[in-house]
Length: 562
Image (cartoon, rainbow, N blue to C red; front, side, top):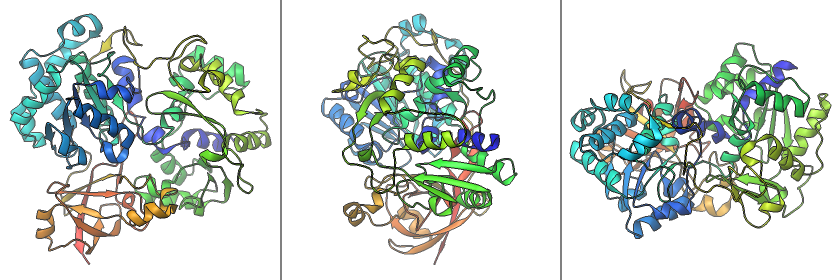
């Protein structure tokens, strides 16, 4: 029984991106200044005078946020795009920095080198609100634009120009997403982003801030509620004796002392015989996790697999028991969106068939396992959250009846906090970190001569469990493609529409080619929406040593004509 419970704790499958998008921001931004969330609001982005977007195809993966970016540009903001691919926002950008995949730390250090060399740093902010500045300064000294150009391929002149644009703007905002977190250096990337914001004093003001964009509608809420392998709700540490006792007293249980396992670690533990059962909620690791041949081997080997889903997904097909959950339209509750806004969700229709809201299913299973988890309504759960999670202490259903509140909201009369760190940081002073460039875990060599990176299309959502059942979306975007540069296509004698065999050191898939200048020479791009060409059969499960996030964004591959 204990092994089963630990597997559930370790899985964290309330939402895939709760641990794939958010995980690196917890050790990253918390180390820097005590927060792992968007520091500003979506609407506030439109107030920026400069915006740096890195690791985010914003208009396709976060189209609502993309509208604010477009509005900012119309208002005169200068946009800097740091991305290997020619994403849509490049057309609006003042400058595009097309780096080699996995060289983000070098580029960010190069930007800071220019800012310091030219005396553009926020001197007063650094003096009064930060610490360890001298360590950062010493580290970035060697990342001259010329050195960074050799590492990243970004021209030194472009790097200098981008640094001046960002540092000289009255308010500059940074947006990032999984393009910089899904690396073995994901935490390093996030720390470098935080360093740049601290160096220029772009924290705690309208139009500024560090803004990680969540991949799903309730990723922030899932993370806030402890859907990570190493924390309690509200980002309270298992090592915090006082916080741990608070939860143990309320729940009348003894909580584990050690953290659980990350997703990749769970699969390894299953095959080692250490985990015998697993409970997966609203997640489809048979398409979304790296090295899915390894995932399948683990899920087929486990003694007992429970999947709680709204449709029969590729993962649910492997389950011993499938529990029918409900969609957003069939339940009451809250979502906490990417800007920390806690919002009501209201039931529009009764649950279909024998399906039930997730919280009811969890309560019923808990009772059968011998723990009397008993709530009569989601509002009671919110009341308990307010009691146990300091950031949510002032949030209740009556207060968010008409409009959501941004956490932290520490008391019943508090108006919420749209902008974080306006006066001070949670940890006191904002901390600079000295971050050195480290190459990706896998290089293009040994016959695998190209780099594969992954992402999303505008018209589909995650593994397509919902969006591919929408007729209109499927008509617009019925299949995925392997995007390759015209020069690579010519070298391989390929044309758009031809089928190829794409292989990595972990597996192979068939895919149709789309020849496009969006992808740089030597780099391929695919989405993971389509089970017919499951790109995560190829991706690398190598982990960031701190956040335990896999390196989805860089896999060495080779291509063979069929």
